Image (cartoon, rainbow, N blue to C red; front, side, top):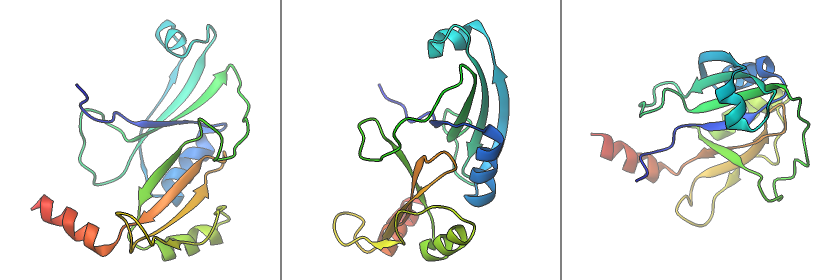
Length: 163
């Protein structure tokens, strides 16, 4: 039986740079860092010489389930990896969608800081989120993120279930 999502994880090239991006620009909170260079980790990742640096982050104010974190960032110190084709249309490509309350403001702020966007916020015109806005952006390793401002009616639905 499925109980929930433990976390989402990205492999990054520079852990410190990525932690700064996710905390300072996107608003995540860093809760834990560690190095892993042990038999368990090597067996898990399938590299006999694996040595990793890991950071665990949370979205502040969100309820915690079984896991203590929402996002995990992993830097392989050994073996060193390299970025393949970063095109979002490639099989295996993924993205993480983040909810924001004012997508136009966040877009202007992040774009002014040099964050790469695929487009300005787009009005969602069809489907369950019609009336909201969305746009794609990239982190320092070209990992695709999505910002979503849900339509007001969806926010009211969620707030109604929390009471």
